[in-house]
Length: 424
Image (tube, rainbow, N blue to C red):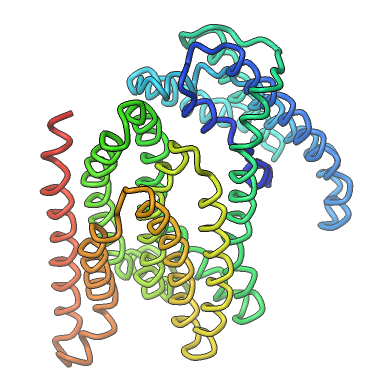
């Protein structure tokens, strides 16, 4: 719940710092840090205040004191040093990777130790708080960089508000769009089937999380540096980065779709086997999200945050309409296809805006998208169509098709991406 509140209240502090032209401008950076601290305090108060009403809503008295404990999370994270953002901008990947790995290990160890000593829900929360405190200390005392201090500069704050207001609206709409499918399905299908859908969705978006995560943490800082060389240099950087990221996305999406029927059949109870045919349909939506996530940062580099809000608004509106229409026409498969149409609409908004500023991407995305559609539907849905075509040989044929498609997807990703990765 706290993570959803953090997403809903994102005001673009991180992107504002990373895209700032002068990373030695301590007035701007300290102002960003101060605003982040204030935001953390406000969120902590809101989360703590939610304890009593939530305890009544769910009839769970423990939430009265658990929520104030959970509220320490935004309070602490809001005070993280901006040295993390500066290192992101400087592309100090080795330092950031070691830091992130150490913090992940510390967080896991603290949760395990506290759970062994005090096996309650509170121990998991306390373990997370310990990890956040460690991150806070290391960001200020271990990572290189100047120390932050409280400071509010009106002009710097005005720049961040002007840039971040559309990010705030965009993330708020993203939050709503991300929940729209499950909110709509709750009234359309049985609760058990909704759980199957949720599991399939969790698997389907794994490629999206990986590729978009890399794009946001690595591509955005890199593009912010390239932007100083003019639009031509920026366009070359975008094309080069997407030549690496998109093949990886194609391969991971196709492999996920191809193995999903066997994954659910072998590892899950029969009640969840339906997730095997849902995942190949859901990965199409994940693919359009990958296309969007590998190019929407370009607009932030150019200082245009409004199209992100427009993209997410189009995604939300079209998803609701297309999903309901799809369910009326074809049931749950039609509903899932409708969510993909919504994600496609959001992608088109970003692509059109980039084309208008001289960075065309649509024509480069047609071939990878065709590969994803053929590979994901052909390989992932092989258990459905192979028996109809090959009769008693259908099961063996579906396994062969899935293996061929999966290996082809992995080979495509490696062949297209490795030459660029080897050049550094």
